[in-house]
Length: 412
Image 1 (cartoon, helix red, strand yellow):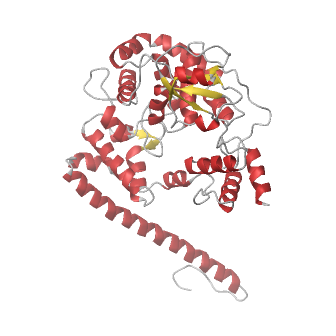
Image 2 (cartoon, rainbow, N blue to C red):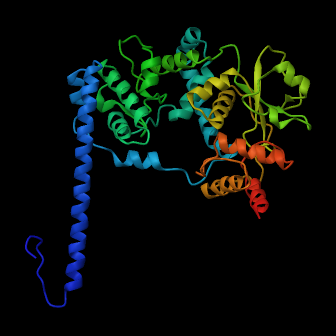
Image 3 (cartoon, one colour):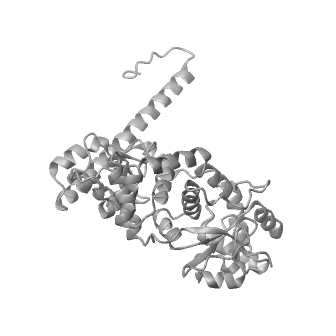
């Protein structure tokens, strides 16, 4: 065969065939990669035209998209789903470690003047700002190593969530065009979350603030910019500087678990009348505050009465576990809030296979969860709560290992 460097010898037909097959595969892969690059280049050309129409300068576009190409690792991370979920206890144990508590206390003292200035302006208590800081980037240690423009371009070009990431890419270009950061220094997570508070570009353009007065906003290296920006965002989404986030509570034996939902809000006095008490058994505080009961580990785990600042935290990150960790870590910085409840010996996370089995069983039994995907989201928890209610079980909607076994047995 001329052109491939092979010499045909008697008895080597299979070897030659294998070599030709391998060569063909390599050429096919190269051709596919080249086609993908050509598709990306055409897409990028159209995006640049739109960016110019939006007022982004040509010089910014030239610098931002120099040597631009899709980043396979970004798509890999976007598609990846964790094999195991985290229980409340494992999540809290990692988020609120003794090391993080000790370091946070020192940083509160070290930057006390800055935090006092920020609190006066925005009404956000320092311990919460340090808690967000610790959970997002371990106090600025890990801000992400992906080039934000390339990561966002990869995700905007991909069809799965193209609309969302395309919008974020335009926000990122606006930030560059304003001169806040150089493209080479605009690093972040694979999904484009940036700097020490891990702001998405749209959050940056909406809420980031020049805290040090130098004319630009640097949430990567300037702590005044980081904390003024974080506090401005929290204040804008309803943070209350005269309230805490919530507290661990004790529920009465006859508590109606249907009330343990964020959609149910009652004044503290109403929860007191129902029989809810502080975790140590004392009365709830006499304050004119509305709150909700959440059970992050189901009816057998700890209970929390959470207020408006908890809800504001969930606008930052829509995870109940995250919001509980922010509040609890903030309390630990000021030597309060150690939990009364303890982790049970049989606490274990569910695997994706466990959750898929639970979802399939709920569907088979007539409790619709949609397509089983291994993620116990609101629809799955609602269906599980309905199943528990129908079977006379505590309707907490919590997907535990015990519930996986119960559903399997019910299915037969």
